[in-house]
Image 1 (tube, rainbow, N blue to C red):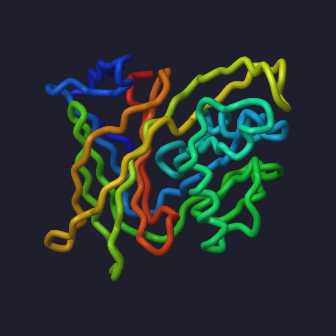
Image 2 (tube, rainbow, N blue to C red):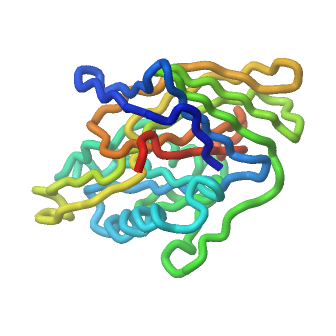
Length: 252
């Protein structure tokens, strides 16, 4: 669920650092609700000829019922195909490492693209299922407030966690396009949505039974059209999201 206060949201895109800011006299509030919001992750690459169908599938989620309320999508462009002829400008080594960690944690047996994960586990149903099955148990509400470049978070966990919890905040780019001039997708114009352009993480501090954190919005490596934000909480043992929340950063 997404709620706003003073939602003028004149998002400032500072080309020098490509950072986002919401005016200090306005704020954006995002609230997950207590039921787990399913996190859908696509690991993809512009150098992979089998990835465009998965990119299109993820883009179609923009108009799917339940976006942000029931599920949040995010595309991680990996860099392990860059050496075969086309360096993906959205790729980062840490996104490749995230997928490898899923393999180490048992979420998938081998690393490949396109790879879709639902709540931290390999999900092949995106190829055939018409209905995205989401939702789950009540895990607690995650509230995010953005004012200027500051993000404050509060996680009212319904369960007890013996391990430390970490908050992750990602800026996502929408309506991104690339004219691919080499590699397996040579000659194609690729369209991308929900692309992770920058991520920051910090520990959540437990105060009176609540988990709290404050951090700065991440800067993005590339211009973002119609940016969105996704935030999620994970623990030290498993990087899969315990709870997540997201929304667009501009009026649409």
